[in-house]
Each structure stands twice: as C-alpha cells, then as structure tokens.
Length: 274
Ligand code: BJW
Ligand code: ZN
Image (cartoon, helix red, strand yellow):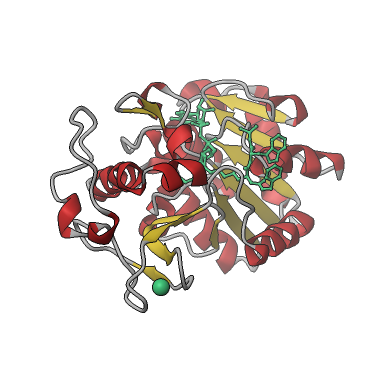
C-alpha cells in the first residue's frame, strides 16, 4: 500500500478527513466484488443468458415470476456463502471512531447483499432494499425472510447454467398474511425509491461535509446524481474505484484501485500520519 500513501492526493485527503464532521459514503456493487459477489455491469453481471439489469425490472417479474425468483434465489444463496471484506470492515471501524469523537459517519448503499449490515455498520441506508426482505404483491406486507431455500419449489433451482420448467405461481414464495405472491423487497428499474428513503438521503446529503463514492459505476439514478449534487454545494467528493466513472469529473480526488486495498489505508486513524 506504499503506492497510495506516497501520492500527494493521499496527504490532501487525510487533511480533509481529519477536519470532516460529517462523512457520507455512497457504495455500489464494487465494494462487494472482493467478497465474491458479482457486480452488475462487470463480467459477472450475466445470469444464464440474461443481463442482471434486465431481470431487475417489474416487467420481467410480470412476464415470469418463476424466472425472476430463480434469479433472486440464486443470489440469496450465493451471498449467504460470502463474507464482508476489508472495505466493509474499514467503514465499520471509521464509523465507530467517528461516533466516539462525536462526529457523523453515514453509509448509503445501493447494494442489496446485506454485507454492510453483516460487517456491523449501523448508520446505514440500503436504498435499493435487501435480498432477504420480501413484499407482498397484493397486500404490501413486508418482512425479513432468511429461509434457505425461500420455498421448497426453489430448492436446487436458479443455477446459472441449468434451465428448469416454470414454477407455478402458487408454488413460489407467498405472503404469510394473505397467501398472494411475494416479491423481493428491492427497487427495480422504473420504480421510485421509497419516500422515507428519499427523505433520509436528502437529509444526509445536506448535512455532509465530505462525500466518498465507492465501487459504483454511477450510471443508475438517482444515486448517479449524488456526487454532482454534493460537488455543486462545494463539498469535496472522493471516488474510490478501479475505473473512472461519470462521478470522476466532479471528484476532488479519484483513488484508482480495489476498495478493499484502498479504504483501510485511506480511513485509518488520523493520528497515524497527521
Ligand atoms: C470496484 C471494484 C473494487 C469493481 N473496488 N471498485 C435520469 C436519467 C436517465 C434515466 C433515469 C433517470 N432517473 C431515473 C432513471 C431510470 C433508471 C436509471 O437510472 N436508468 C439508467 C440505467 C439510465 N432509474 C430508475 O429506474 C430508478 N428509479 C427512479 O429513479 O424512479 C424515478 C424515475 C423512474 C423512471 C424515469 C425517471 C424517474 C430505480 C433504480 C433501481 C436500480 N435497481 C438495481 C437493482 C436492485 C435490485 C437487485 O440488486 O436486484 O440496483 S439495478 C443495479 O444498478 C442495482 C445497483 O444498485 C445499481 C447500481 O449499480 P452499481 O452498484 O453501480 O454496480 P455496477 O456493476 O454498475 O458498477 C460496479 C462498479 O464497481 C464499477 O464502476 C466497477 O469499476 C467498480 N468496481 N470492483 C472498487 N474491487
Ligand atoms: Zn399479502
């Protein structure tokens, strides 16, 4: 990690970080990549012959709830086998330290994998929902569901290279209250984020004085707009990614590399070098 600490931007970032009273972090799929969770637009973004983003839509679910449930069942089972990585843990450590010092540290994640929560982050908003929560398509009942498999009909299904017959809707996960079909409680393309979530995002954006953007391609709205909104208010934006993205242009610093390698050094206790 000598490479990053010798960069002039590193020392400049550490100055900003030492003065920050309210750090906001936006994370995307890239932060979980080192845990072995595929990103959306990377090589792992294909499931069977489908783009993950084509299945994360209300129309895909309307057309084939069976197919979409197989896809989400596959991802639930995959994520269960994965652990938070050094990037998730560096954020947890930073949050604890900030709290002790009476400062704010808050994470907005687009990820539905629950790894931030499992790592121990508490000041956290999962803006696209969570793989382990369901919502009834009829009565709207929402509940956490960690069953494995989520229903008998999905046992041994969802494999990326094995198509099976359609599962009848009545055999798919159903609501405890009204027996109707449930869906993953996540935000699909074309759906709006939940009003309470949007309100909380606004609040956090308005109060932050340093904004970190980690492992997101910054192409999916509304999250894609946050870096430029924050930058327009004169708040420094710092991007950590293995590639440049639309957020790079508005970032004061872009640290190129894997989040699990960069974040632990970037967010290490400030007394180490100041
Ligand atoms: C690493 C790394 C390592 C790898 N270390 N980095 C304005 C303009 C144009 C369109 C729209 C607009 N407003 C809304 C829209 C429509 C749409 C949208 O944004 N479309 C764009 C694609 C153009 N947005 C919506 O529909 C949203 N709804 C909405 O805004 O409602 C109002 C409205 C609707 C319609 C029109 C106008 C207004 C809802 C978006 C919901 C997104 N849902 C998903 C699925 C969630 C459930 C699930 O997981 O199944 O969310 S799609 C998918 O993309 C998922 C992700 O959270 C999201 C973002 O992806 P992310 O996290 O950035 O992943 P990747 O794969 O794209 O990038 C990974 C990055 O990591 C890369 O940069 C790598 O380099 C990097 N990386 N390894 C650091 N080790
Ligand atoms: Zn119901």
